[in-house]
Picture 1 (spheres, rainbow, N blue to C red):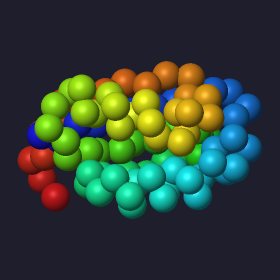
Picture 2: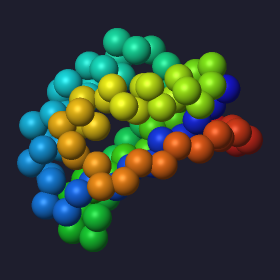
Picture 3: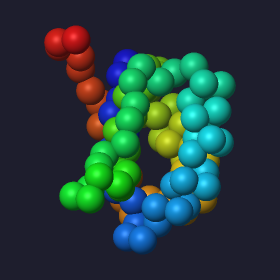
Picture 4: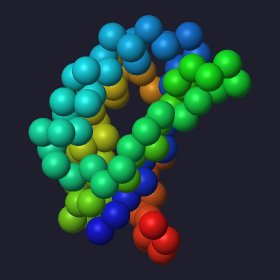
Length: 90
């Protein structure tokens, strides 16, 4: 089942994102459940949130993935929303 993780970074946390980016990307690779992912961009073009689409068994697995993401562990996010998602196009 697919789930979308939609995050917003805490204001002023760009350096936390940059400092944790390599660990975040390694986590994505190691877990093998990410279908697509990328940062949201603010008005100035800086990263300020993320969209991650997971292929996992259920909401509990999606929550577990999100909670163990190095970005989350570093305290980057102001908010995290997880929603079931259905691919229609693409």
